[in-house]
Amino acid sequence: MKSQLFVLLFCAISTGISACDAFLDVNRNPNFPEDASPAAKLPSIIANGLQQQTALSVLTSAHFTQHVAGRAVGNALDQFFLSPPANPFNDTYFRAAGNIPSMIERATREQAWHYVGAGKVLMAALLFHLTDLHGNIPYTDAFRGAENFQPKYDSQESIYAAMDKLLDEAIVEFGKTQPVSAPAFNAAADILYGGNVQRWIRFAFGLKARQYNHLTKKASYNPQRVLEAIDRAVNTNADDAQVAFSAAQAGHTNFWGYQRGNANARTFGRYFINMLDGTILGIRDPRYIIICPDTNRSKGAINGSGQPTTPIGLSATGASDFYGRYTLSTTITSTLTPPGAGVAPAIEGWYSRTTGVQLILTNAEMRFVEAEAAFRANNRERAYNAFRAGITAHMDKLGVPAAERNAYLASRAVPQSAAELTLAHIMQQKYIAMFLHHEAWVDMRRYDYSPNIYPNFAPPTNPNPQLMGAFPRRFLPGSAELLYNRANAYSEIDPKGVPDAVWITTPVWWDKP
Image 1 (tube, rainbow, N blue to C red):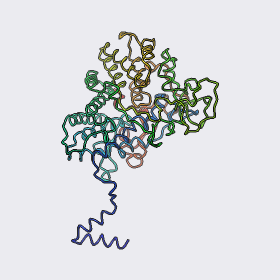
Image 2 (cartoon, rainbow, N blue to C red):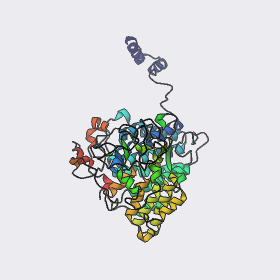
Image 3 (cartoon, rainbow, N blue to C red):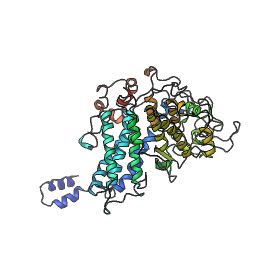
Image 4 (cartoon, rainbow, N blue to C red):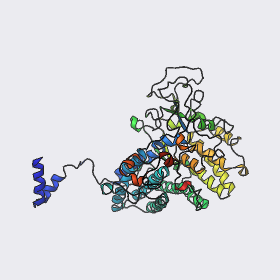
């Protein structure tokens, strides 16, 4: 220790600057360069950032929408007993978005314009998502590292404006031609779209359309603005923004697959199953057996009540029926040795396939956004055509046979003319298509969890009494923020802090007039 101190003092007075610089570099790992190429950074930003979108956040919000439910009685998330979450803030700022400014800076130096565009689209996607969960979040004061551990929070309205501007800038960047000297924008780096800039542009416009349509409670809501963005957004299933999983190792398999175990304590929500089994819409949906292959054994759980009896062939602590069917026999009386948590289903559910995909923004979603905006613009024919196209896109995505798809479209579950179409029809089908997606919770908040839109939707069994019958409107502040930036984290309501129930039930900016 004394010798190191001597060298540091010597460096302070010596003219041998180069030797001292070399000594001071001892804590730098040459295998982890501080100024990595944009091509090296982009895959991690995509993978780590977008994982939050339909994975870690949805572990909580899917209980609010009753897409999933706890298998045991009294699941805390079912009943709205919430804790400050760590993942949304940490994954957004530290694992993903925190790397975007430096990637953009180096890409700009190298004239790698498509990396600049991708960085701006991803920043918008990540911060849009975070603000929709929490309300106000840091942006103008963020990404300064050790310079500022207590960034101020920007209003959600300003975040929306700033991210919309970023998307405009990104679209311009994608229109530029990169010089041959710039890092190639190709499939090796772009794990989202394989270097296809036109699909990135459609993704950007899709984000615009989505966010514009969040503003339905605002006087400024303009359905025509939504439709103009839709016209340039994702419009085929081939354009879907999705991240594929591999089976190379457990950590790289589907977040909702059996190897990850994230749904071991969960099953399908009874409300979601009733949307598929004919209870609510009157027709058994052909997607039911694809999403939930164990239809004869599992009927979903009422949120808060759990499953009164464990489905045959499973154990209370074993692998969940959420993952699929554990034997090829489907009779209700069949028995087998209960599988452990790591046992692969004989037939996997579409959303829980080991090598499935994580859906970020899809053609099906865009068609339902189009249908809602066109309906609000009183363009009923466009709304009706988009509505049917949304059902078709989702069924095609899941591999529903064409004959079964067409029979469903011709059934009483679907209005057969534009005159019959209602907002409830649009939102119910969108609810099915947005299974395990954070946008489903956005929609339920926009429509105030209304049973007029979502028939038979009801509070869970024994909800948190402190919420006084209200449903959640936002997540609690991030756990690290409450430790290190508490006053700013609560500044939207009261810097001194408020009871959890007040915070959870306070609408975010777009959720109020």
